[in-house]
Length: 313
Image 1: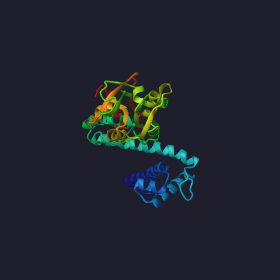
Image 2: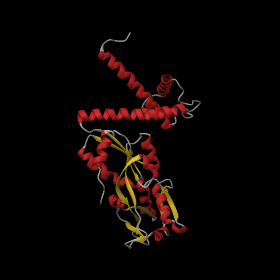
Image 3: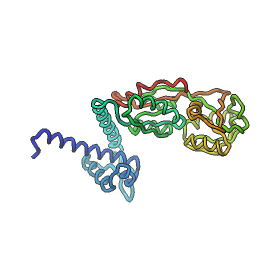
Image 4: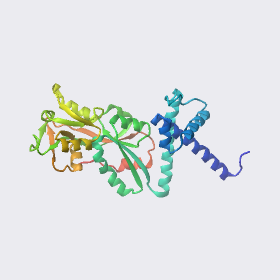
């Protein structure tokens, strides 16, 4: 027989639902890691605890969620449906907790930001003033491709993205323009173009280049301009890190192309120099993206409202 004590009933309700939320988190982690051991490590639990939790969730829902064998084989069709709901439910619970915490202590919590590599140097222009106003907020900033940012927002894995806005896939997300990305050649002061006030894309294409990886939207943009009219160019290094490209440029004497704002913020030191690329002068709009929802988490809502367009560095 259940307890008639309201406090006991409330505690029992909380325990049952907290346990259910935990199991949903198990499913999300397993889907992300695609490996029971890694998922358990990510959650800070043992693998048997994870396996038991998934089985309990299956029993609760009355269906098989995971294709099992000697190793993880993916989710069943029912598992994929459950995963989508798990992401929504856990995100709603997180939002609810943030709302309650904000009422009690003011704005606090953790803001997850995904940024395309060329915008990473800009992120501090957004997070620094926000942190000065709300010092109980912490940040997690990760480098991601434009595609990864869209997927991560859809899966509630990040709160906000900083990416290129000329992307048809953003139609179902909220967007906010921040600045225009223009480009410069970064090279050593002993290179062929070191004393120029500006260079053309054709001249840049004549150099040995280090560029971002082909999966990056920035690389696809550069390919269009460097390779205009069927022009060929030589790439001697590819990386998903602008810092790696700058280091190679400094030490190996190659050249790279990066946004002029990033070059200014990084404060390129000797022997590197940044030269604007013209002929043509091209620009691409960069901005914030987030999930379109009726009620945003308090931290996301505040960050969205307080972030201003970046006019200059």
